[in-house]
Length: 504
Image (cartoon, rainbow, N blue to C red; front, side):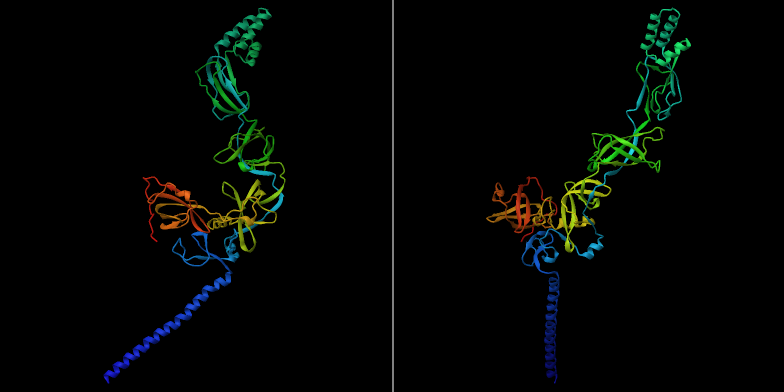
């Protein structure tokens, strides 16, 4: 009985094992079929597959799915409903709403004829009075004055003693009673030649007495910029005593962005509003457009002259300035915020049907009050992205989408390909190309490896041999990566850190 029992137990175990295996197989078959069906559903939803590509090398297209030859990853399908070969970025409407994208229409109208800028007040450098010693002398007294004091015309500055004037006055007074008009006229001329002011000469004639001291006064109303006299000091003829800057007019120094300086001219009317005088509007005119722009702020320097009859406009005050320009012609307008300025050109993201967006180059005109004139690149009624366009521009750059150039129809837009560089070593030279062990192509996201590259021209290999260290430049096209540049590396050049050779 015990033997029969053992055999029966063995048979039962075998039957259980076979049943478990069959059950596992039966369970796996529908699951695998279900997984294939689940993978096929997105294909049916998204439409026809145009091609497959590696996201790290989006310019390279493949006819069949599989593993990328560049990276250890599966190729990704590009569907017809995603934009396919068109040079546009497709964004789902719900995603557009989450990104806060906002569209604006291209309208036709007259650009604003005024420009709002900022400025600050400064002294009028043309309204300056310089007080000098007309003859050698001494400073007897200095009045209580200091730099930046506001003076009235005739305000005393200092008392001077000029010995040459004293002797000239004595000679004149001695000849007054001589009754000889010729000699008297010669004595008066001598006082003038000695440098005596006309007012001092008249005082001598009226009083009949020698005026030993001359009181130097401010010739104009203004601010005292410089006072270079001290009691007891000796003065030389022509020495500067004081400098006074007038306040009858002041200059408003205005910074105008260089892109908005078109149409400005001398004599143009200007309105200024100062926070120091709320509610008041000051009028003036452009006195000069200075020849040198400000390199740091990239602005033109415009000088406006403002009348200052009561002297309350002081240097350093700031102002909001409205420059009135000639009326602009009828033109296409877009919001200034919709323009992406790269330094070399200006772009907008043009909104198309079915959530597609295309980068388009535009030529801009005058800009004012939040709107910019479009001279070329857009048509009336089109819509551009006014908010979120930088995200679309980044996506277009990642996909290698070219910008639609000026005067270029949309159908002619091509995919641009960049030149990618790495360093490596020539392992072999063959008829259909060169075998390279290279470091990473960082701009492609491609790691270092060893592979065969075709050449754009056999002439590139002139002067190269197996074992040479090189810098290689490749361009991705429909046929793969093509070598377009090959250069020797200096003998002392070391392999970049992190570069490794990957054997196929």
